[in-house]
Structures are given as C-alpha cells and as structure tokens.
Image: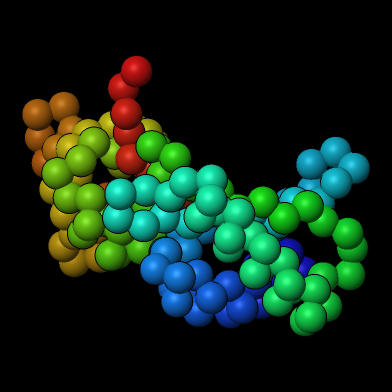
Length: 152
C-alpha cells in the first residue's frame, strides 16, 4: 500500500515541482510512532531554502487534498535532501561523478557491503568507484543505498 501511495504522490508532485524549477529527489511515506509522514525531498542548482520548501508544500498540499487518495491523516514535510543527499538514478550518479559517495549493497562485493570512495561514473549497469586505491564495479541492482559523502 505504501508503494502505491508513493507512486501516486510522485505522479502528482513531479510535474508541479519540475514546473517550479526543482527536482524531486525522493518520497517517503512512513509511520513513526502514532503519526504518518509524507516526506518529499527537493533540490535545485545552488540548493533550496525554506521559502522554496514552503511554496512547494503549500501547492502540493492543495493538490493532495483535492485528490483524496490517502485515507489516514498524515504530516506533509518538504525539505532539502541535505549535503549527504541520496543518489537514486543513473542521472544522479553521472551528475555527481568526481564526488565522494557512500554505498551500501545487499550482497558482499570483495567481502564488503559498505564502500566510501570517489565516484568515477557508470558502465555496464555498474557504479564505478575509486575505493582503497583501486577501481571497483558495483552492480546497480545490488545497491541498497547510495549517498553523497561528507567527512566531518
């Protein structure tokens, strides 16, 4: 059920967000404690600010209220993906080539399931990473999570 709701939200939100000059990064529909949360992460070149998030939230809230496909009450949150933004699409991996990334896999690759390294790019349905002074190919279908990585 959550996946169906997420797909419907993407169908409604993506054109609205795109027309405002933003990119829809991710959608979460999850229950935390007693409350359901619908979270959308947006971005644009140079980043988004609070006013951007508020503008998208207002318009999206109106559209979602009109559609009425989410039965239970929920809290709508629109925010920036942050400095460790997720990488979801091939376009994300291409766009952030040269950046440091952290990748978690569903199965071990060379005995490891977590990698932090420089993103080299994509080739043959694999993400190519500079990891511990060697190039490693990580099949896209094994990637559970990929994020930009910032060392603090």
